[in-house]
Amino acid sequence: MNPSVIEFFWDPASPYTWLAATQIEALAARSKATISWRPFVLGKVFEATGNRAPATVAAKAKHLFKDLQRWAQLYEQPLNFPKVFPVNSIAALRMACAADASGDGGRFAMAAMRAYWVDGVDIGKPEALVTAMTAAGFDGAALLEASQQQEVKDRLRANTDEAIKRGAFGAPSFFVGNDMFWGNDRLVLLERFLSSEAR
Image (cartoon, rainbow, N blue to C red; front, side, top):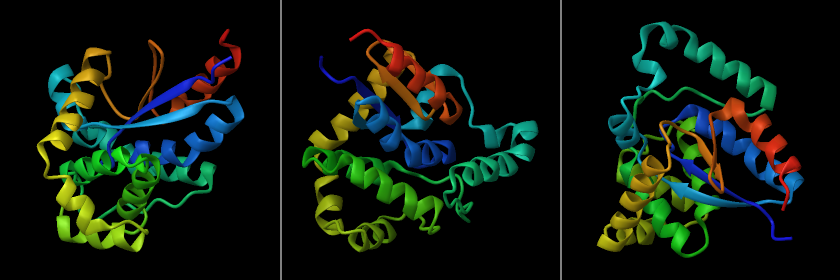
């Protein structure tokens, strides 16, 4: 039996993606699954599907911070709402694609999201991102340079286009084969699916 692959489409601009990211590795281990970290541009997904960020919907925005804190407390994970929100995450996502090419996609994803949602780094500023990633053990300058290559930019665009084609409309989005699970609060359904899947 081959292990299931959880394709995790993520954008560090999404707080619920950070919350889900703190849980996904343990979930994969329990389910004997592997994770494929797939950076994608959430804003482009919103544009293509007509969806909107919760913070842009007045009624949701009023509830957002409290909901995020409740999830963070449940998971016993830190979450500090950043001063710069929303943030332009394109530089981080391109660097993530560059890191993924060397097998460090998951570690980079966690470091980038932690920098934003825990440490309050403005990851929209390349120089701040480089400093944060260097502190996390990466060669931040080299990743930024690599992120400017057309091949890397094309990979991010392809990930985004693929997610839209497969039915994604928000983040986090998880796929196991053709089955999609959307949102941090669907992790329980994802795990149940993995435990019952005939494979």
